[in-house]
Length: 624
Figure 1 (spheres, helix red, strand yellow):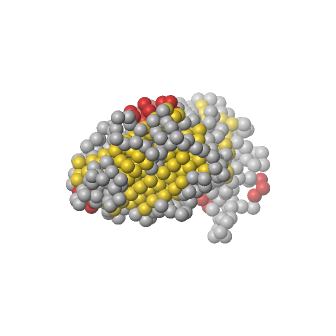
Figure 2: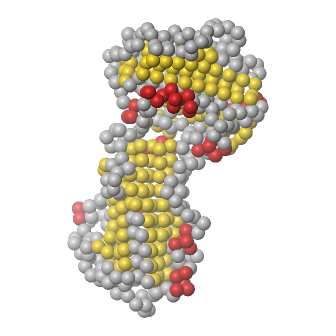
Figure 3: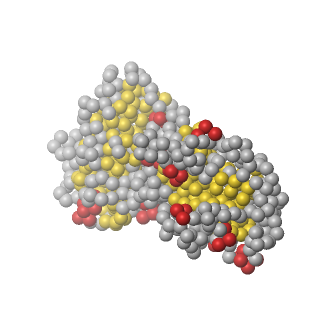
């Protein structure tokens, strides 16, 4: 259910929609059948009327029991053709039984799906119905069924009813007991991944299993680290099916236990990351963890239920092979943190995090920030592939962040545009552009030449705060620039020579709006392998000639190398730096200097109003 496919980016249910609590059938049906997202918290035992009623759930819904009190009695749910992005969680669905064990007259399922996709059925107790507990039919796909208790039924879980072999399903950590058949039976499924399930034929009951897991038709099933206890014919397959077993435990079982087939093995890790429990531990793990939990179903849990970690790996061992594909998989208007874990490697691509995907973290998983590199080589003058002009400065960014509450850590973001080879076009080439609020950059390297790090805002009248710490910024001309309220703290700013080997440049080019904070560099180091007295600390960028701007750079408590000019500020495009806000405070090193008209220094009183907290306001950055 986490896979990005069929136009759906994983499964997150009603996240981002209104949270409603229901205690009546009328309210449950009202919200479950609505055309917009809802998180529906079931806080009572709701009896279906008539018996066997299956509510026709529509797309973009989370239906979750409040603690252990959410129950559906005498009926269930139906997800029809095309219904997608549905989570059914933490419910007890029970007692539609009509007195006949092998009921041929009634089709009263707990959950039935006909042609649905991207569905997650999790931590439910489904029992004692009048046909099957779960039916996944008619090419229903991208389905995950996890941590459920399924019991007291002739037919537990049937999959198929189609001649197509297209569906992909994951079934794990379910406790299936006191059932006779379909545990599950899996008919014509392209990829069926069953792991860590606990199937048990309960002694002392009148119910006897006829078979356990069944691969039917052209199914290609991987069955691993599951535990079968006392089950008759625990694993069976049709001659046309492929069934690969590994690591399963069989205790007191008898009859058929089969594997093989022409289809061959497949690797679920090409779709998603997972770590199976040891098969010997499955009975205790599943018995203690399956079914509704008293800790689930609170409002906070419901909202966060589908929060995800998405993995990226160039070698195909993650869910995605590009960072942008993982960003695309983040649901629009997501309400909680999504971590994109990027394995070591060089990812030559551009990445954009759009404004409707907040709360994203892109994190390298290597031992060093140098192990994971996102790199591209567009410049302001680079022609667009569609012939519609050139990218412009902002459009040249290797990584562009337009979403609030973004974080990046333990990776490198680089623009490796070859200036020497392209002296015929504009040279601005951005590595990272931010245009949003609450951007936290922790332990990263941002590398380029001209215009490396663009710290922008969504618009001139919008606040955009950035906090960078324990990081490196590398460049030569205006390579930290923009109108954001930005702090660079405990970091290294590395000066580099230009393409032709000359030393000359500008560290900052703020374009701050009036009455806003600009760029603050604190507790850092400015140095590099360049000639002495060749770099300015900054100059005022009045973007578009806007005289209303009031650019600001403050550099304080920072070590400055001899590369810094003795007159460290200069004019830009006809605008004097003296009419804007440029100052230092208690800097050290060979590039530091005493107060003068060419080198303004903050007084202690002024410095007390230019601390990091004054820049960040009510925001305290924290890793998540």
